[in-house]
Length: 294
Length: 301
Image (cartoon, rainbow over all chains, first blue to last red; front, side):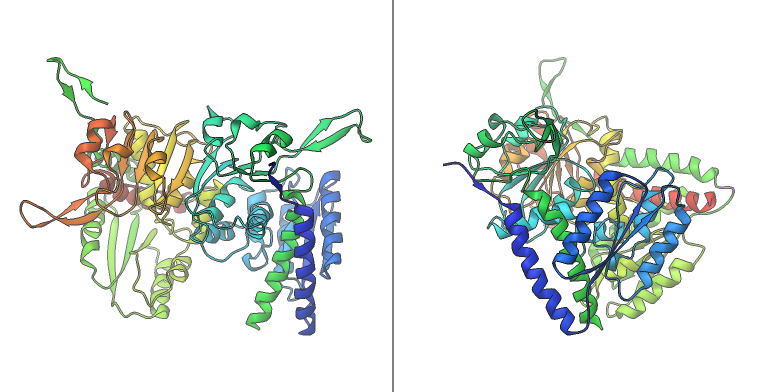
């Protein structure tokens, strides 16, 4: 029997419904969570992604404030602007849309965001706290993957082997931190997409997470029966039958792998929709934490 | 791997001598100290209570500092110190210009919040790399101080000619001070790193199966003989981070052993670190290295 499809769109809808309810509770206490976003420059992809976040925020009842700054903005002014957002009591979550134009030092920018409002989880303190097993915000992709696993009944990975084909700061490393946590307790192998004999590793995986951006990179012979396969690849593949002339697919050769898998995430409609939802969830959480303190 | 000798016999694995690696590192540090224009790096060691098992490590630090010429002071706070007093002490050390590095002897007594204390150490002086900010930077591949044990394992591998680059490293143990930072160091795309890394732990059911796939096996479990010969592949490199006190069967006296069943594993491994005399001395040498680096950074500013 082919594997269960982990439907990120449906899970995302469920979570957003829960978030609306949490926002209602907060609003009853006169707190309306607000997400502040900063985008610098003219990157069309970034702009459309920020619009998506703005729309999603409105959908669950969050306020948002997106600030679009010119391409030639300076590092100093950007840091000042972030500090202002850090100080404002009505702002609960802050994100800076990456990549920034070349004149910026991304690390210095991200380090300026207060860890209490760092809903993207990119601040070194957030990363360190998560690695140390402490409460903190984690980047949206690994947070979304964990949430999908938990909600689909795969949250306990004790004695299971998780193989992650990605060692980036946005996916592989923070995901390893979460999988290492006592409550999950997986064995974890972190591989580069170019690791020699990659199939030797992927075939051992009970949980396989791939983010390599290479279409059909993971074929059916590279996975074992009963694998839980999570795909975060984003590949635009030329397709003359499609309206735009291309279609989106992941890194996993979906149908053949699904035949062997216990569960699998599709692309599109898998991890992708979860990421924006996690950003909203983190903003609500930041507001709840603040409300609990005051 | 057994090496055939001139008379047709076999020779056991090469023992990686941590003491001589540490001595070489200390020599290099003396050279770096000479370039500091007379500035003397300082290391403050904060100790709560008097845990006897920590004494030999602390003695090693003091001796290492003396050997290299680092100024060091050990400050002892009573076992029942409050969180406030501890954080005040850390805060004074943060602003004390004699000290470029501060370490906090862990574990802290139960009533203290370790994370808050670690977070109080200024990242500029956090030579043990335990502040969450330092941990985060390590994972992100940014410049920071690496926790000395994990840093020592990497250094020991590279200096003994067993660079982890492109190899499969299996780390048994996921502690915040060894397993996790070591994994973070070894996955970076850097010379001496860039490995495929597996993190497992004692709860792992098929542990032997995983450890047998290791080119380099790091034991950081904290249990004597947790790693037996059947768990090691012929030709693997085995690094033992364990420090366990056991009673010597022959003499009845306490002695230190690692996590690896040394004699049996040495028959199969191509190289293995002993306990004592393996990772321990290199750990201390890396702490000294971080302290000198902290002084260099301050001078450069």
